[in-house]
Length: 42
Image 1 (cartoon, rainbow, N blue to C red):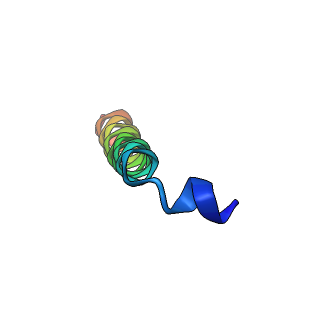
Image 2: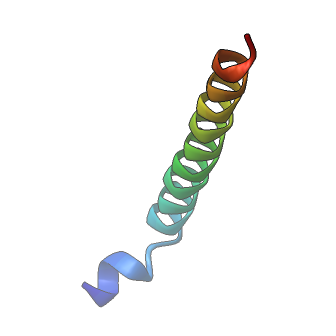
C-alpha cells in the first residue's frame, strides 16, 4: 500500500479524479439549485 501511495503518477491521477469529482458535484448542485429557483418562480 505504501508503494502505491508513494507513486507520484498515481497521486496525480487521484488528485485529478478528486478535483473532477469535486467540481462535478459543485456543478450538479448549482444546476439543481438553479432549477429549483426557476421552478419556484411562477
